[in-house]
Image (tube, rainbow, N blue to C red; front, side):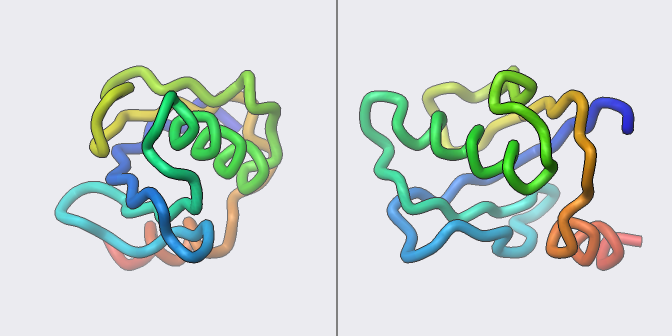
Amino acid sequence: MTDILLNIAVQPKSSRDAFAGWLGDEIKIAITAPPVDGKANDHLKKFLAKQFRTAPSNVEIIKGLTGRHKTVKISGARAEPDEYRKLMEERK
């Protein structure tokens, strides 16, 4: 798979980690980590790495390190999660 660029709206301190739909042109992702000391960013990277079956080091936040709106680059993805695929189909 080629590199994947995602525009994401993060919802920290959620009850579970999940793709949560669309927020405008951004994919909304709920994560359980709080937005303190980079914990939410680290947790987001691990969540996306697990979902796309790649190493956390292959997930890079290229824009929005300190905000809820982020652009994330995923390299070396070996899978496409069902939830992500469904969201992308909704936009077609």
